[in-house]
Length: 469
Image 1: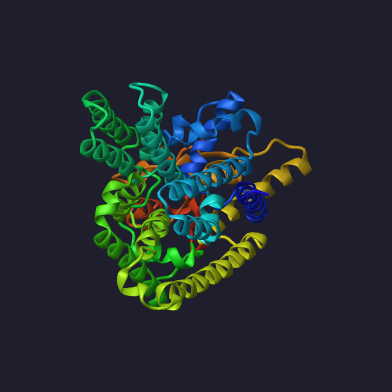
Image 2 (image 1 turned 30 degrees about the horizontal axis):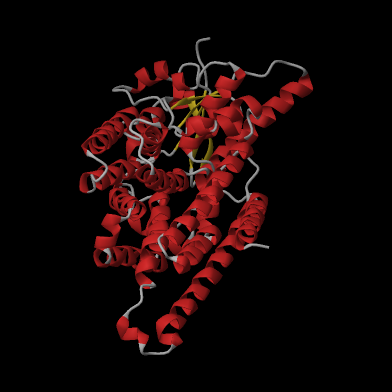
């Protein structure tokens, strides 16, 4: 059996194992992914579009649009598509490193990327960081294929621009793809001025259009403490992570490694479109500091740091194997063992349906609404109208299967807030977040018109008592 067939068989086995670890409940989803799924399902079922109330989603809506016709309402279908796309990207990544004569890097980087708990969590939660990395790998291949067989304004050209637009819609780090392609053609114009100018102009226009399309990236949190996100390189994405000494030290170590590789290998990074995209994304991602940024940090360390670490050095050649490679394999053994440990914890969390504080809050609301449905069915009476205003409207709509709107804006006077929440039966949000303080104050002054149903660490569920019918 050839090595290629063996590799594909192992990759297929990995897909099956990861599928068995995925969460089957419609919880613990990324808000942007939930918004894209809702639009696809509304198109497939030919019902009112969710864009009217929830706004325009990112371009993952194009990736999953067939699912809206074939498997509407099935979150697992989107996870399977994401899983298969990542598996294909890893296959291309392995070939990419091999073509660059980095066989050792190909084995180590791809192997650790597959078993990293952060990878499993990105797939399970449909987070944009993983799809952003997949876009980088595809762009690197398309760029190389175009340079080998240039065809002005052909399908390869527009495919690269579409990938840039797709990545930019996911996260601010997606801008890195357009900037990386722009820099590559700015420095290398051997194919002719017309080819060079077409990519320079095309990449810039696409990035600008992508930024305008997703102005604000409302589903992305900005200004987060970067240490938990950076520490996820080693720890994965723990539920409701608390910043402590361990998280701070591991986050500092991850950021130090990234800075070391950026400075030490800057010349090679500038010449390699994949490394360049990862490097620019790492810098841009600091503005958010979320776990998607942490995932790009991980991919940067694996795909940029490893080639630099494994580079032959004359000072070490005269020593034995342990000095040259042995210490690295010991480190890899420790890291891979810790990854397997966090993978086991992730499987345990999924199996026992353990959720973050926010998802527990949404689960509580979902259970309450299901109870109302059950009682209505038992009494053979129409179910009361349920309409929720949520800080996470897309995730809440999928979990509760009811009408959900975004949170109303805070008004100057509490009495005016009643007009905005007319028809709303429940409100779900985090009352002590800075952006919600004015709304919290208004709702607290409405007296018995608003009652607290559940107060949890993840937020609060309020019941709005309707006055005039």
